[in-house]
Length: 560
Ligand SMILES: Cc1ncc(C[n+]2csc(CCOP(=O)(O)OP(=O)(O)O)c2C)c(N)n1
Ligand SMILES: [Mg+2]
Image 1 (cartoon, rainbow, N blue to C red):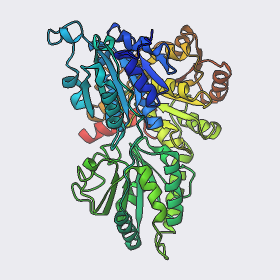
Image 2: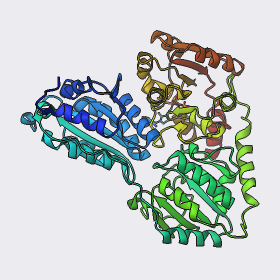
Image 3: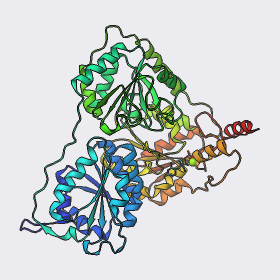
């Protein structure tokens, strides 16, 4: 209940700050440690999604942060709740997504006694976050929550953890709300853009690589216009394929795990590389082999929203501290040379991409997952959102699906399993009119499969593909490569995933041959319910082009 003397409880002040900063959704697993904050949601216009496990809740909030560029919000209880949420915090960190986790904490007077579920959140989450704090004084909630929004969002975004002692949440205070926060764009200087133009005018074989966060639809369109004016080949980095239209004449492909060798050759042969937004982590850099460290041999331009990232691994010839959104706008002022020497090579780069992604290879088994992906590519609307976790099954997404629009792939660049289902719940919750498809592995799905209950609870009709090969296939693949024939701890005995869907109140269907997929997908959509399409694939089909047996035999041959 709200008082009419102008005072508010700490919980009310907190939730009012979320309203002030424009929050529309929050995800939680409830806890008695933050009852006063929960109660304050009762009469405020923020949609709460109650989840089944904090790992799922935190990933939902991370997905909202990734999609909107504004902090996703998750509430958890003390020790076990907050530590359960830690994978979502880690994803926000590695993927540079804005996220704020509010955690109930023991009462101030009980601290330092290892009270019930007490954790030192600054110590535990400090290294995983941009900032971890605890609010001791309800009167300071507006100030500290405002800082949490700015810290999570500005520069290179990331997670913030705010602990809330439970007695602080029931203190009454009279304090004004903070003004709404706005993300701060960091703009390149005029001289930066002049130097970039000079480098482009001197180049013979330039290429641009896109990644990271701080993007917008406007920014991706501006980069496409720039690419057209300069006939510049553009590639996207691991799980950021949605930053450039896959059918754009300048698109050169996806630089992730197992990229097109022709794309790698093109990057190796480039004399100017412009990295926009990405930190070029281990996956896109091909385990740090693609560019020399610290000094790349190509002329290297690095544009990143965090000044701390510039020169951290790669010593750039031109370092520009700017958000992709601001930099993309500034590109409008950069002029191409009269003679674009690389002009004829760009269509070839795009042809190479199309050829690499066009037709799936034959695969062992009756379900060819490549053909499933090309079916989706041909039939889903261009603005459909694909959510995925981690495992070899994702290789078929990267290889065969062509992302056309901004923010249509929500996947963990951190390679965290269990992400797809919560991400899809969050995407359907905030975009009820968009088509959402989750692509999961059998191992991956069950890491957060419990959130299927959340999809049913909130009546969120989206389709989950469970690519069931009966194994933690990625690890089996590495096992066969490193220790051929010595299979241990990778086989899975799985449930009937379509029966799982029905048991939760959703729709389930099993697909045992490729030709049945289209009608199964149509039935899943027609059901109007959250749905699981259980795809039975052969574990031999371990990558889009290699069988398990071939990998094992190659490893054995190398040993003999
Ligand atoms: C949270 C988490 N735990 C473990 C791993 C290590 N790991 C990477 S892929 C993988 C197996 C994925 O299995 P599945 O989802 O069945 O996909 P598949 O590789 O079989 O296609 C594992 C265990 C990880 N990336 N993330
Ligand atoms: Mg599997």
